[in-house]
Image (cartoon, rainbow, N blue to C red; front, side):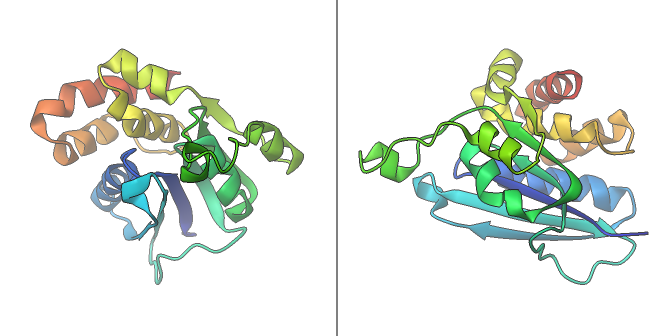
Length: 190
């Protein structure tokens, strides 16, 4: 079996690390060899956070290079553009349409670079765009964006829905399980 490469990119505080933990647990439970590597930027200050998740029969390294990602799940539009070069030809990028101002925008040193989806289109990438923030809010918490996006990613995997739900139940704190199951369903059915 070939190795499948997933990049999860976001901004500090969005829950990308929980998303990678959920995905890793699911894949291990499915019998895959899984390697996960987390790269923390200035995550405490809203900086870029990226996680590599590789799985297959045998995985030797967690690192994903340019043109190797089968999937990119981007929690924010600028992050989608930042990591677009890592998407392989025929790969899929899921993009949350949320815009989070990076530090240069917050301090007034720059303007938010609108047009990220147009930039992706100019690169020949057709993103699967989803308003994950609205769906997370509908589920009960704006903090469930990560699980909404995992629900959307699940549409591209040949793993039964029930297995994803079991992974949520085994990964998320018990008091948040029901809300996260709803967020997952909203992302899956969006």
